[in-house]
Length: 123
Image: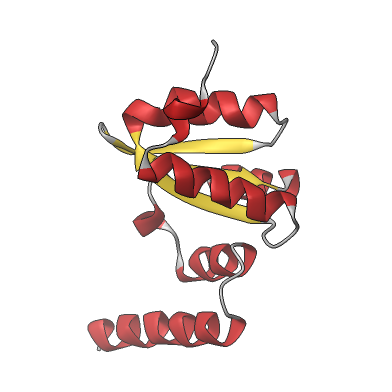
């Protein structure tokens, strides 16, 4: 499959390519990129060509999540073995946020907020 530069000019693909740039520069260990399913083949080709480990999660028939980056991080996502991000436990959600490079304190706040909201629902 031959790709030309114009195939990567869509806004989704430009963001995807920028995420790869950030990964290659060491700014991120793991990237989560949501994109139209119709662009999945282009994205996979791009990742395979650059030997970047990845994992695809089909969100809807028209939308996919692509996790890519460090192989250890990818293997953790695979081992969580959930079909959707909203199925993640509070602990898995916390871990994913940290691996994606989100602010640690905000992840702590999010975790505690999720835990507290579940306690209130049980009461």
